[in-house]
Picture 1 (cartoon, helix red, strand yellow):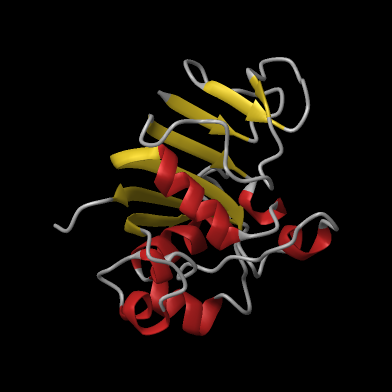
Picture 2 (cartoon, rainbow, N blue to C red):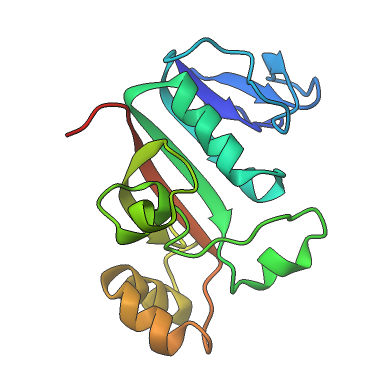
Length: 178
């Protein structure tokens, strides 16, 4: 099963669309701030959250729900505004801001995961991409390319001067030790 959480009226083809209102294409009306989500354990093969997570009250509880409903190895794609973006702070409905390290707390290969222990659920962070969906032209495209090749240097030197707009995370549900 493919889930498109917070799909609005732009549900991904082949997905089960979930949103708070009965918009066109929504298959399941559910407030994603209410847990548990209306799905059985381990039913999802893919889960998408496209500019949704920044609007939800509790990121940790939401990640725990994604872990519960995803099967082991479930691919999760999360698109969020980059915390330095003007779009991140401009929207009064945004509750959270995200950096490239925001999901490190859930990745057992990252020191933050064991050090802070905010949750017992684990995900493999497969990729973090800056501005993946933004047009490939102009000087900001060159900055995005640089950021995607040299994230640490971008964060340290260029990000405060030339902030990008969006982060795309690809995670995998990890239910068993690997």
